[in-house]
Length: 160
Image 1 (tube, helix red, strand yellow):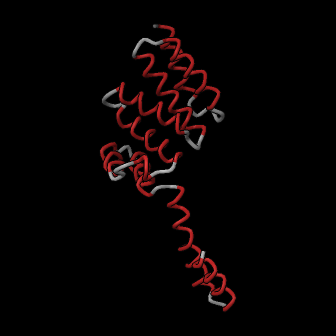
Image 2 (tube, helix red, strand yellow):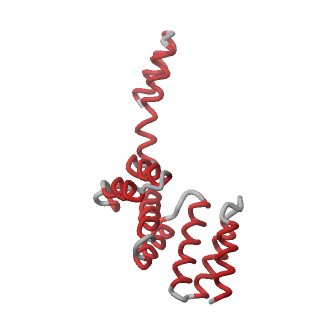
Image 3 (cartoon, rainbow, N blue to C red):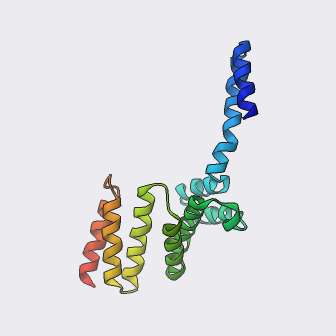
């Protein structure tokens, strides 16, 4: 807050460059309070489909219960669910359920978590539960980004 006030003072003196720099500098603590830097870096690794790099950045968070706020814990578990779904479906299911319990900010992420849980439930032959997750994912997918995946899972469910 003090940096922001000093930035306004710099603007009043005509030092516009200093003012802009100080305003940007004052935004860093706010950004890192709401978005943990390790989660941001893990998401960047995941976008590049670097699963090992994503896990490395998530491992830097030693105790997520105390280091992260509630929504961040949701995304922490969401990312771990994506990582472990490649190896261990039972563990991935636990992470996705925990992520949904803590909550995810974006409806698309929640829809993706529910779609993943539907796939895991189908693998474990729990058709009713898979159908519930698919229905919830369909409701949350407002922009129809997951439309093809949902349709493909519904067709696979008919075979079970």
